[in-house]
Image (cartoon, rainbow, N blue to C red):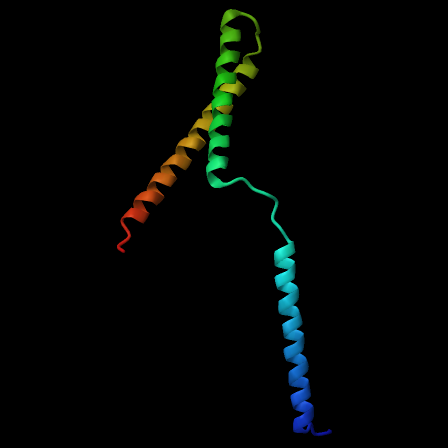
Length: 111
């Protein structure tokens, strides 16, 4: 087995450091160029979700009214619209409760 002298060891160390620097640079470039798909801000996402729930509720109301007036006899469609509306409302309510709880937890943190 051939012994490695200190100059070879230093050269190998420098190669490893250079490779590490190249990898760090490649990662930072890929992170800069790799943009996440543009997502709306949290507030905009919440406003959009509330509007969607409102639309579901209006649709359910319209479908129910049509069924009551005899314009349609699709009871399954009416029930589906009402269920979608109900689930959307429940989800919105749960998100609101979680946000309030998080706010209360943050407010109780000692500064």
